[in-house]
Length: 84
Image (cartoon, rainbow, N blue to C red):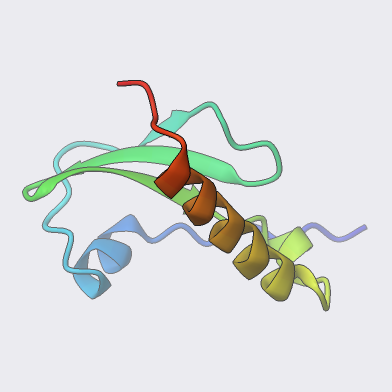
């Protein structure tokens, strides 16, 4: 199977989303089972970035399934407090 590579462009992402300029290198973090997770620090704050797996995102239903799972996660987050 021909693997599709991740296209990680943190500088462009920060500019597009107005997150500030990167301070240091993005750090891989655990927690992403199917996708990759990174912690970044910018001049405007600290952020967690989820890089979606390009192989999975090729599936016809992937985008809609991802949207649904994010909606469910937001509903749960608004009703169950997170520990700090």
